[in-house]
Image 1: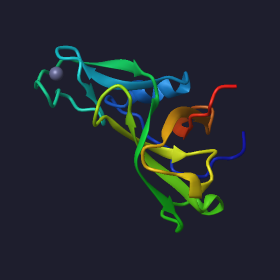
Image 2: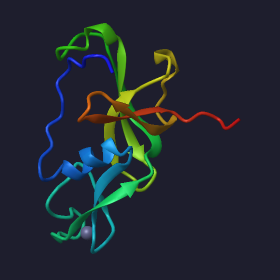
Image 3: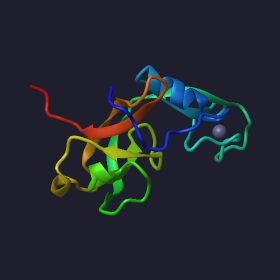
Image 4: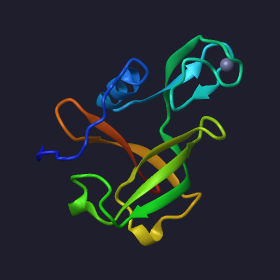
Length: 141
Ligand SMILES: [Zn+2]
């Protein structure tokens, strides 16, 4: 594992399960225990039914590109060797409007399209941190 020189995420009480799940290569979001609504980014109450009974739940990591941008300028330290790279907002299959963000890996930048099907992949960037990212869904066989 080469030295990782980008800013690393900091886990807190709301994101701990997400980052611990990523280390196990599972995508873990919050879900309402009362109405089963997925909640991301995490919030202490369900935005649909206002209950405070929110739990962690594994999701498939499959979805479609909702929006994207291609970064051509350095916004944060450590990304200079990766320019240009794609940041995607993915609408997960579990629920309409359930959006998450990552980099799109293993895809030529001129092939990226809104609606393209993608799946989560995991980048183990340090001993302690794994980043959920996305890659195009490849046809089987
Ligand atoms: Zn709810």
